[in-house]
Image (tube, rainbow, N blue to C red; front, side, top):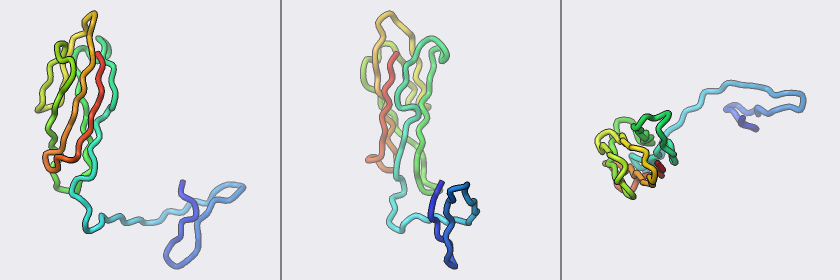
Length: 126
């Protein structure tokens, strides 16, 4: 909910004690002229505990990229940590794993191919 929205031509849309007034207004968003082509990259989910169920030995993180229209969302993947119980496909971001009596942790990092300063890391426990 957004309060105290001012619309062209004056006036104000506000909530009232006994309820609220709803108005629909057109909104136009534009990037600033000096906005970078890629602003952020997020891995979803950020933290994962993998077990036999429900993933059955395979799991893929999803990279979400905030970028200008037409800019590549491609990422380069890296994996670090105890990789003795996992396999990783850097082309798809898919992790294969096996649950062992003593499994461990890995981190997966996705880095934008367009701007290497834009990245995110996820923690994975098996």
